[in-house]
Length: 225
Image (cartoon, helix red, strand yellow):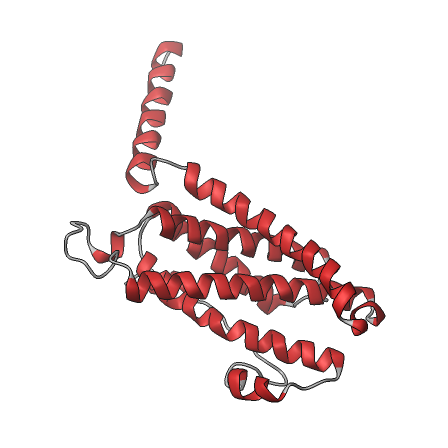
Protein backbone atom coordinates (compact mmCIF):
# COMPACT_ATOMS: atom_id res chain seq x y z
CA UNK A 1 0.00 0.00 0.00
CA UNK A 2 1.12 3.54 -0.69
CA UNK A 3 1.87 5.84 2.21
CA UNK A 4 0.69 9.46 2.33
CA UNK A 5 3.77 10.71 0.48
CA UNK A 6 3.40 8.09 -2.25
CA UNK A 7 -0.27 8.87 -2.69
CA UNK A 8 0.60 12.57 -2.98
CA UNK A 9 3.15 11.84 -5.71
CA UNK A 10 0.62 9.75 -7.67
CA UNK A 11 -1.99 12.52 -7.47
CA UNK A 12 0.58 15.11 -8.52
CA UNK A 13 1.58 12.92 -11.46
CA UNK A 14 -2.03 12.69 -12.63
CA UNK A 15 -2.41 16.46 -12.28
CA UNK A 16 0.69 17.05 -14.40
CA UNK A 17 -0.63 14.69 -17.07
CA UNK A 18 -4.00 16.44 -17.08
CA UNK A 19 -2.35 19.86 -17.41
CA UNK A 20 -0.18 18.63 -20.27
CA UNK A 21 -3.25 17.22 -22.00
CA UNK A 22 -5.04 20.54 -21.73
CA UNK A 23 -2.02 22.40 -23.10
CA UNK A 24 -1.83 20.07 -26.09
CA UNK A 25 -5.49 19.95 -27.02
CA UNK A 26 -6.96 23.24 -25.80
CA UNK A 27 -5.99 26.82 -26.52
CA UNK A 28 -3.31 28.18 -24.22
CA UNK A 29 -5.01 31.58 -24.05
CA UNK A 30 -8.62 31.18 -22.94
CA UNK A 31 -9.34 34.91 -22.57
CA UNK A 32 -10.64 35.41 -26.12
CA UNK A 33 -12.97 32.36 -26.35
CA UNK A 34 -14.51 32.75 -22.89
CA UNK A 35 -14.87 36.51 -23.24
CA UNK A 36 -16.51 36.13 -26.65
CA UNK A 37 -18.98 33.57 -25.26
CA UNK A 38 -20.00 35.98 -22.51
CA UNK A 39 -20.14 38.78 -25.08
CA UNK A 40 -22.44 36.66 -27.22
CA UNK A 41 -24.83 36.10 -24.34
CA UNK A 42 -24.85 39.82 -23.47
CA UNK A 43 -25.38 40.74 -27.12
CA UNK A 44 -28.46 38.50 -27.19
CA UNK A 45 -29.83 40.30 -24.13
CA UNK A 46 -29.16 43.68 -25.79
CA UNK A 47 -30.91 42.68 -29.03
CA UNK A 48 -33.86 41.28 -27.06
CA UNK A 49 -34.33 44.53 -25.13
CA UNK A 50 -33.91 46.73 -28.21
CA UNK A 51 -36.37 44.61 -30.17
CA UNK A 52 -38.89 44.85 -27.37
CA UNK A 53 -38.54 48.64 -27.27
CA UNK A 54 -38.50 49.33 -31.02
CA UNK A 55 -41.24 46.86 -31.87
CA UNK A 56 -43.60 48.51 -29.38
CA UNK A 57 -42.91 51.86 -31.05
CA UNK A 58 -43.04 50.92 -34.74
CA UNK A 59 -45.30 47.84 -35.00
CA UNK A 60 -48.90 48.31 -33.89
CA UNK A 61 -49.56 44.57 -33.96
CA UNK A 62 -46.74 43.84 -31.50
CA UNK A 63 -48.58 45.01 -28.37
CA UNK A 64 -51.73 43.13 -29.36
CA UNK A 65 -49.90 39.80 -29.49
CA UNK A 66 -50.12 37.31 -26.62
CA UNK A 67 -47.20 37.45 -24.20
CA UNK A 68 -45.56 34.27 -25.46
CA UNK A 69 -45.82 35.50 -29.05
CA UNK A 70 -44.01 38.70 -28.10
CA UNK A 71 -41.29 36.59 -26.52
CA UNK A 72 -40.99 34.54 -29.71
CA UNK A 73 -40.94 37.79 -31.75
CA UNK A 74 -37.97 39.03 -29.71
CA UNK A 75 -36.31 35.63 -29.85
CA UNK A 76 -36.57 35.50 -33.64
CA UNK A 77 -35.05 38.96 -33.85
CA UNK A 78 -32.04 37.62 -31.94
CA UNK A 79 -31.71 34.63 -34.27
CA UNK A 80 -31.94 36.92 -37.30
CA UNK A 81 -29.16 39.21 -36.05
CA UNK A 82 -27.01 36.17 -35.21
CA UNK A 83 -27.66 34.64 -38.63
CA UNK A 84 -26.63 37.82 -40.46
CA UNK A 85 -23.52 38.20 -38.30
CA UNK A 86 -22.33 34.59 -38.50
CA UNK A 87 -23.07 34.29 -42.23
CA UNK A 88 -21.13 37.45 -43.06
CA UNK A 89 -18.07 36.46 -41.01
CA UNK A 90 -18.19 32.86 -42.25
CA UNK A 91 -18.30 33.96 -45.89
CA UNK A 92 -15.39 36.31 -45.31
CA UNK A 93 -13.22 33.72 -43.54
CA UNK A 94 -13.95 30.91 -46.00
CA UNK A 95 -13.77 32.79 -49.30
CA UNK A 96 -11.95 36.09 -48.87
CA UNK A 97 -9.52 35.95 -45.96
CA UNK A 98 -6.00 34.53 -46.21
CA UNK A 99 -6.56 32.19 -43.27
CA UNK A 100 -7.53 29.17 -45.37
CA UNK A 101 -6.21 30.14 -48.79
CA UNK A 102 -2.59 31.09 -48.21
CA UNK A 103 0.17 28.50 -48.10
CA UNK A 104 2.37 30.71 -45.92
CA UNK A 105 0.69 29.41 -42.76
CA UNK A 106 2.52 26.20 -41.81
CA UNK A 107 -0.42 24.52 -40.03
CA UNK A 108 -2.74 22.12 -41.83
CA UNK A 109 -5.87 23.80 -43.12
CA UNK A 110 -7.97 21.83 -40.63
CA UNK A 111 -5.93 23.25 -37.72
CA UNK A 112 -5.85 26.92 -38.70
CA UNK A 113 -7.45 29.61 -36.58
CA UNK A 114 -7.20 33.31 -35.81
CA UNK A 115 -8.43 35.69 -33.17
CA UNK A 116 -11.32 36.63 -35.45
CA UNK A 117 -12.36 33.02 -36.07
CA UNK A 118 -12.12 32.13 -32.37
CA UNK A 119 -14.04 35.22 -31.27
CA UNK A 120 -16.71 34.61 -33.92
CA UNK A 121 -17.24 31.01 -32.82
CA UNK A 122 -17.33 32.16 -29.20
CA UNK A 123 -20.04 34.69 -29.98
CA UNK A 124 -22.01 31.98 -31.76
CA UNK A 125 -21.67 29.66 -28.76
CA UNK A 126 -22.98 32.48 -26.58
CA UNK A 127 -25.99 32.86 -28.86
CA UNK A 128 -26.82 29.15 -28.82
CA UNK A 129 -26.42 29.01 -25.02
CA UNK A 130 -28.76 32.00 -24.57
CA UNK A 131 -31.27 30.63 -27.06
CA UNK A 132 -31.17 27.19 -25.44
CA UNK A 133 -31.83 28.78 -22.05
CA UNK A 134 -34.90 30.54 -23.49
CA UNK A 135 -36.13 27.33 -25.08
CA UNK A 136 -35.92 25.52 -21.73
CA UNK A 137 -37.51 28.43 -19.85
CA UNK A 138 -40.52 28.64 -22.18
CA UNK A 139 -40.57 24.98 -23.26
CA UNK A 140 -42.17 23.93 -25.52
CA UNK A 141 -43.47 27.30 -26.78
CA UNK A 142 -40.21 28.29 -28.52
CA UNK A 143 -39.40 24.85 -29.87
CA UNK A 144 -39.67 21.17 -29.12
CA UNK A 145 -37.16 18.36 -28.76
CA UNK A 146 -35.72 18.90 -32.25
CA UNK A 147 -34.64 22.42 -31.28
CA UNK A 148 -33.03 21.16 -28.08
CA UNK A 149 -31.09 18.50 -30.01
CA UNK A 150 -30.09 21.03 -32.67
CA UNK A 151 -28.77 23.49 -30.10
CA UNK A 152 -26.90 20.87 -28.05
CA UNK A 153 -25.18 19.59 -31.19
CA UNK A 154 -24.34 23.12 -32.27
CA UNK A 155 -22.99 24.22 -28.88
CA UNK A 156 -20.91 21.05 -28.48
CA UNK A 157 -19.40 21.13 -31.96
CA UNK A 158 -18.77 24.87 -32.16
CA UNK A 159 -17.27 24.98 -28.66
CA UNK A 160 -15.00 22.04 -29.51
CA UNK A 161 -13.82 23.75 -32.69
CA UNK A 162 -13.31 27.04 -30.85
CA UNK A 163 -11.28 25.55 -27.98
CA UNK A 164 -9.15 23.13 -30.02
CA UNK A 165 -8.87 25.15 -33.27
CA UNK A 166 -9.70 21.94 -35.15
CA UNK A 167 -12.05 21.88 -38.12
CA UNK A 168 -12.88 25.58 -38.01
CA UNK A 169 -12.98 25.81 -41.80
CA UNK A 170 -15.67 23.11 -42.02
CA UNK A 171 -17.54 24.65 -39.10
CA UNK A 172 -17.75 28.00 -40.89
CA UNK A 173 -18.82 26.26 -44.09
CA UNK A 174 -21.76 24.73 -42.24
CA UNK A 175 -22.59 27.97 -40.42
CA UNK A 176 -23.08 29.65 -43.81
CA UNK A 177 -26.39 27.76 -43.90
CA UNK A 178 -27.62 30.23 -41.27
CA UNK A 179 -28.34 32.46 -44.26
CA UNK A 180 -31.75 30.74 -44.45
CA UNK A 181 -32.77 31.93 -40.97
CA UNK A 182 -33.78 35.53 -41.87
CA UNK A 183 -36.11 34.22 -44.58
CA UNK A 184 -37.77 31.76 -42.22
CA UNK A 185 -38.19 34.46 -39.57
CA UNK A 186 -39.51 36.97 -42.09
CA UNK A 187 -42.21 34.51 -43.13
CA UNK A 188 -43.16 34.09 -39.44
CA UNK A 189 -43.35 37.86 -38.93
CA UNK A 190 -45.59 38.13 -42.00
CA UNK A 191 -47.94 35.43 -40.72
CA UNK A 192 -48.16 36.96 -37.25
CA UNK A 193 -48.99 40.39 -38.66
CA UNK A 194 -51.23 38.96 -41.41
CA UNK A 195 -49.27 40.86 -44.04
CA UNK A 196 -47.20 39.86 -47.04
CA UNK A 197 -44.35 41.81 -48.55
CA UNK A 198 -44.13 41.40 -52.31
CA UNK A 199 -40.35 41.39 -52.32
CA UNK A 200 -40.01 38.78 -49.58
CA UNK A 201 -41.09 35.97 -51.85
CA UNK A 202 -38.32 36.77 -54.33
CA UNK A 203 -35.56 37.23 -51.78
CA UNK A 204 -36.38 34.55 -49.25
CA UNK A 205 -38.62 32.21 -51.22
CA UNK A 206 -36.06 29.43 -51.13
CA UNK A 207 -35.41 29.87 -47.42
CA UNK A 208 -38.91 30.31 -45.99
CA UNK A 209 -41.91 28.00 -46.03
CA UNK A 210 -45.28 27.77 -44.36
CA UNK A 211 -43.94 25.08 -42.04
CA UNK A 212 -40.16 25.52 -42.14
CA UNK A 213 -38.16 22.57 -40.87
CA UNK A 214 -35.37 23.04 -38.41
CA UNK A 215 -32.04 23.10 -40.26
CA UNK A 216 -29.99 20.63 -38.22
CA UNK A 217 -26.24 21.37 -38.23
CA UNK A 218 -24.61 18.00 -37.70
CA UNK A 219 -21.29 19.64 -36.93
CA UNK A 220 -19.73 16.76 -34.97
CA UNK A 221 -19.90 14.66 -38.13
CA UNK A 222 -17.97 17.05 -40.37
CA UNK A 223 -15.34 17.64 -37.68
CA UNK A 224 -14.27 14.04 -38.18
CA UNK A 225 -12.93 14.74 -41.69
